[in-house]
Length: 70
Image (cartoon, rainbow, N blue to C red):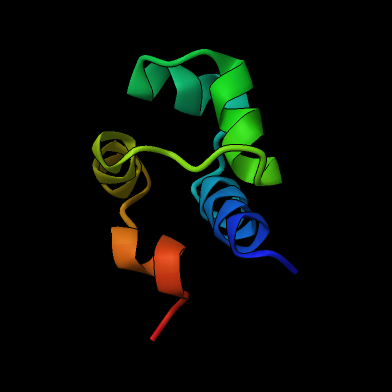
């Protein structure tokens, strides 16, 4: 699996664990629903700014998205 897809899968799992829909997460971050979809499918990597926002919104260290759980 390509790196972007692995990162996206980790973001998706964290969102599901937080019991949020893509729309709910998008609203928390101030982005379009489509941005969440693109990140989760690995088409696009979130910028560092949004990795920080994801960390706060999902209560998961950004490092976990990038490298997996320790």
